[in-house]
Length: 64
Image 1 (cartoon, rainbow, N blue to C red):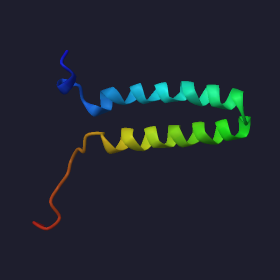
Image 2 (image 1 turned 120 degrees about the vertical axis):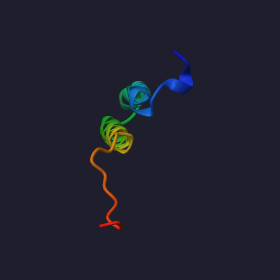
Image 3 (image 1 turned 90 degrees about the horizontal axis):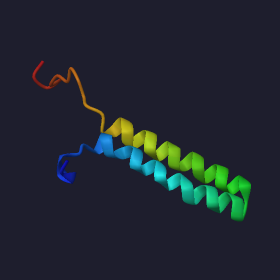
Image 4 (image 1 turned 90 degrees about the vertical axis):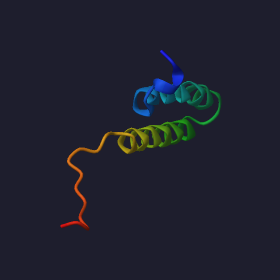
């Protein structure tokens, strides 16, 4: 599989790899800061997942 053929929605789970440094950060310093950072990363990934989802049934409102 060529990297250019990979859809952004299929490649998005790679973003979950960002959780590993967050776990390291939480264990190394503040657990609360690690929890807040993890929630932020999960929110960003969820927003990207929704943003790259296909749009079905789209109609042009100006033509109506």
